[in-house]
Length: 403
Image (cartoon, rainbow, N blue to C red; front, top):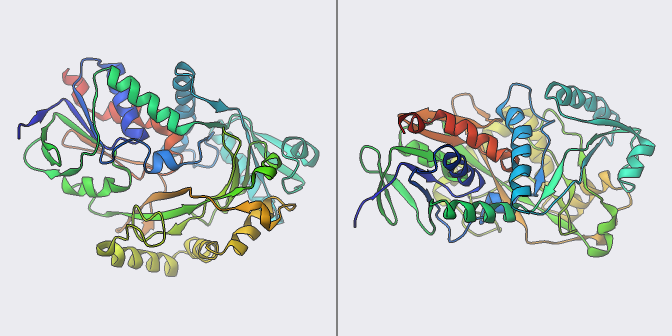
C-alpha cells in the first residue's frame, strides 16, 4: 500500500480537530492537511452529544486555559455560525442558589466572572421571575446574558463542508494504530508520512500521546452523562438555561436545564463513572482491559478526595429516576415526576487523571514535543472553546514557520 504524505496530520475529527484544520488553512491555504477520523461521520461522540450551550466562561480560574479560551472561542464560534447561517438562540443563563450555602458560594462565582471579564448581572427575586418564572424563587441569582445555544451538529457539518472545499482530506472510517518511524504513522488505511501531527483524539488522546512517549503520567477516566427531557407539554417552563451554583469542592456542575434550539428541554447530565470510553448504554462497549485501572483510580479518588466522594455519592443515586427527579426539582419546585421523560441522549466526558499528582486534571492540557502537538483533557467547555484552542495549537506548530 502506497504511503500517503501530508504537511499536517490531525488525529480526530471532532470539533477541535476540525477547528485546527480550519485555523491552519486560514494561515496557509496551500497546506496539505489530512484529518484521520475513526467513525463513518462527524459528531458520533462528544462533539455531537454536548448540550449545544455556548458558555461565557464565568466558572473557571482566571489563569486557566478554560477561562481564556472560552470567551474568545464563543466569539469566534458565533462569527463562524453567522457566516454559515447556523441556527443559534440568545438564550442566556440563570444560576440559581437553592440554599444559604449556595447563596454564599454565589459571591465567589461573581468574583470569578468579574476576574474573567464576563458580563453578568445579579438579579433580585422579581427579575429572576421575569426571566425564568418556574425557577426556584431565590432571593438573588446570577444572569449570564451572553450565553447562547447553538446547533452543534450544524457547526460540525459546516466545518466539514468548508474544509473539504478548501482541499482538506477527511479520512472517515480510518483508525490511528501507532507510529512506525520518524514522522510516520500506521493507520487502518495505510501509512501516512507528515511534517507535524496534531493529536485531537478526544477520549483516546492519552493513548495516542503515549504511543509517542508523551504524557505517560496521564490516564483518561470516562464519566457518563445521562439526560432526561421535559415532556413536550412542559417545555414552556424553561426559557433558556437554568443552572445550579457549583459546589467548589466538587468536580462537576450537577443537574441543570437547557432548552435546545429545537425547543426541547434537556435535564442533566449526570457524571457517573463509565465502564468504557464508548459505554453509552449499561453493557455496551465495556473496556474490560482498562476496568481495573478505572476502578483503582475511582477508589483512590473516593477515599482521598472529599469533593470526589461527595460527587460520587450523589451521582450514583441518579441512576434512580426518583433521585434524579429530586435533584431536578430543587431548581424547579413545580416539577412533577411525570414531566420528566426518558431520552436516548448520553455523553461521555473524557476526564484526564494525573497519576503523579493523584488528582483529576481540571484544565486543558497542550503538550508540544518533537514538532507534534497533543491536546489532552478536552473537557467542557471544549466545544465553546474549539476555535480558540485551535489558535493556541497552531501557534505551537513549527510547520507554519517553515512554510
